[in-house]
Image 1 (cartoon, rainbow, N blue to C red):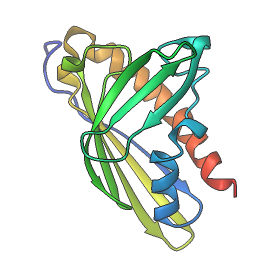
Image 2 (cartoon, rainbow, N blue to C red):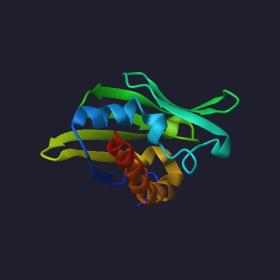
Image 3 (cartoon, rainbow, N blue to C red):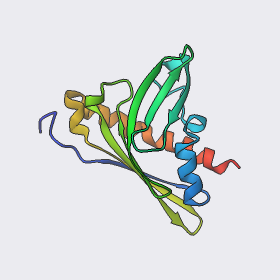
Image 4 (tube, rainbow, N blue to C red):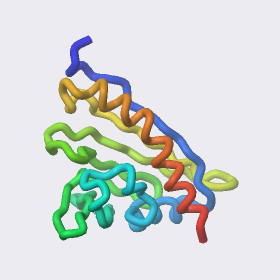
Amino acid sequence: MSANAPKAPLQARVVAPGPEDRAFEIFTEAFGEWWPLQTHSVFGKSAKTCVFEARVGGRIFERHEDGRESVWGNVLEVSAPSKVRFTWHPGREAETAQEITLRFEKMMFGTTVTLEHDKWEKAGAAATQLRASYDRDWPGVLKAFVERVGKR
């Protein structure tokens, strides 16, 4: 298989407490409150915050303490409170962006949040290594999200 061959989407699933509209709102509008910026950022220790503009065409970006910004992706679809889809390329050129789709599904005792990270072939030669990195990292990132949803 060549480096640019399509790779299977990465999938991760968590259950967040409460209704799907709350989980959706926290994932998007409170993004900077739960994202583990200290370990997952472009600017490292100088990162001040990150923002998810939850509208079609909105940006997902990180802000440096000096005001500079690094765009991580752009919002492609918003179907609140059940789905959001966006491009994803933190620290890389926009042409290498993958796509992420999050689905929020109401359950009896919470909300199932399913993440699908796809379009790995756009990362070119780095696709295999990048996918392996996200396969390791998404569970911890989603755990931070679930912990934030659980705080009232």
